[in-house]
Length: 179
Image 1 (cartoon, helix red, strand yellow):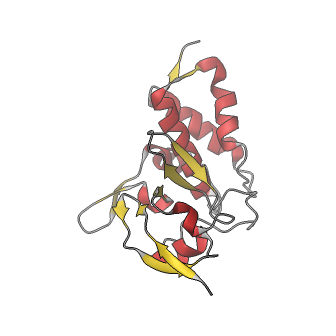
Image 2 (cartoon, rainbow, N blue to C red):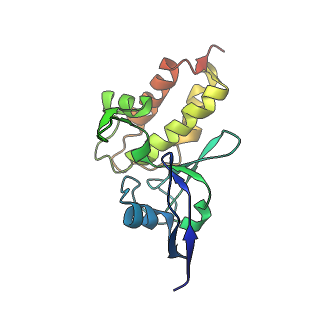
């Protein structure tokens, strides 16, 4: 099997180059090579979005990328964030503070089984970062949340709570303007 070197930045840390198979999917790289199992393999077809990670673009924007259908080598040289990279950790590596999305999802019991939660957290985080650059009018809030989270699948039907928690954190962070 052919392989080549992969180097990227993962959760803010440069990853040493490693030879990995050419056809290895990113979700398998994360799980098997980096022991980062927070991104979930749901459908394996890119439909449910439980597997998404965040790619930070050079222009300062960020986007979700599905790892169950995207090869690991696509991420070469990119800055990637997984669900494990959101919380603030202390010197011992223990979580000391969740990011605002994670905390709001916990506070509002937004998830049930939590299998889809990493994908929803990543999607809502991308939305927060987008709205930090340009806040949304209150009249457009519902549409913006739907457009950002609506392609994620929750088999426990936690949509109402995910959407509500996201709206609440956007408002709380001052990312919703009158209008």
